[in-house]
Length: 149
Length: 308
Image (cartoon, rainbow over all chains, first blue to last red):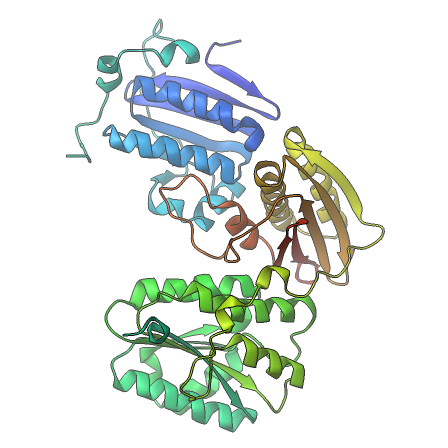
């Protein structure tokens, strides 16, 4: 099993480093029972870059705890000059939950994963190791468009 | 300006259609003449009457069909909040809201009265907001009129506000009717949330709900159960049963809810918390919250009729 895959009670969370940030992919059901795992993976993603894509297209269930973790992640990323994009399928429960809470006002929401160049092989990072990467490496992929400025 | 005048919530008691239109027209025209934004949330037949009577001025009024906005009375405060957010801040602002009509009964009527009581609290710090609630004295039962007199600080154009209104305790308002004796019952803790959803899905499908609505039930029930786990002592009890034309889902726990407006105020986008009961309220047709020192019960009703 990949070091970048976390199996939760009713789903999975995968971290995929990409050239311009990280992609975090959720499958299955996510709620309070997997919220800590999600927070840990997102922290690992932030350690690589403050720009992340969270792919919820294959998440069959998300609730307010998942939204809470995503909001905290976004708050931290935006402070670091990054951004968080959500991928959700049209007419899915995830989209409904995001719209009902008006989070589509603050998160860019797209219907499919944007084209991203995969990171060169050999740069696979473990979720646990990634949290200890130095700050300089973290800022490497910060986008030119710096909202904090 | 005194705080009590920043928001004026007044009931107007009328008798029949003509009286309704006369009073509403006067109220709307006063607002338009003062350049105030006006929103009118009443049922569609009354919207048609007012639009015709306004004779072209209706375009300056925001009309919302109360049968839609207020089918779940717990979602009327968010609708007014949205109106204030979009149009307030530039002086006076006014609205007409008629959440109670003949035929509205049972839990829906109880929750509509609770909504009227909570609106005093929700907009206590609003800026120069005048909200008039028409009640048809000729068609509504006397006890409904009596309750409306309790939930509104002002009646018609009387001057003095009734000071006791904002302290009405909505969390102990009429006890919930008992759950059905044959309700499906499941005791749960944190690790059981997926099992809670399985039980809710079985109940929702056997009630004949479509998949879209089943998803809404799963969301609402998960939010209630999560609340019990996080704030109600770590565990709770789920009950699921059918009543005529509705599925009821109730979670009981040992916690205490202190904010009577919970689930009705739009969550802030940058806060990690505060979305659970908002999501539950927006995923059902009626939500009832009762809370005392002995514990909390939250019941959501999902209509099964429309899905048949």
